[in-house]
Image 1 (cartoon, rainbow, N blue to C red):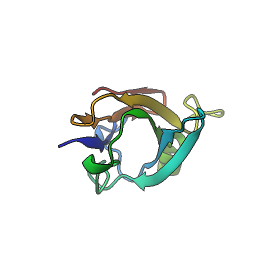
Image 2: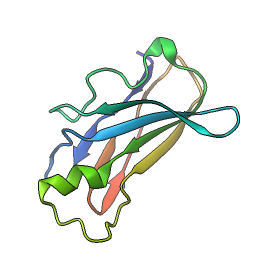
Image 3: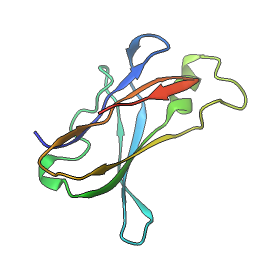
Image 4: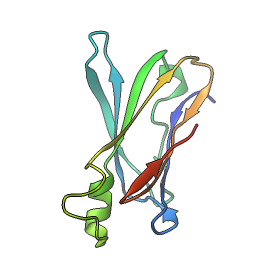
Length: 117
């Protein structure tokens, strides 16, 4: 299985990051970023389908922008004013082999985040 997938884990509560908005963009030849689509995580903290299907994968630079502050604000979590993490946490990465699968998750709290492949 190739393409791109993601999931969100809310390390603050130890639960899946259900309902987080994620914007998926691709770098254009001129260096700008083009929004491809916006997704929202389901009850399991995953997107209902792939971020990028295997057949659409191309070598290049991509960004998953996770709306962390907007995720925590309606849950009554004291995130600070101003918030420690910006409204959007961008994860930029490159596809170098379209035959490989790229799973790019976000593990987060209002004050930290990490990822892995």
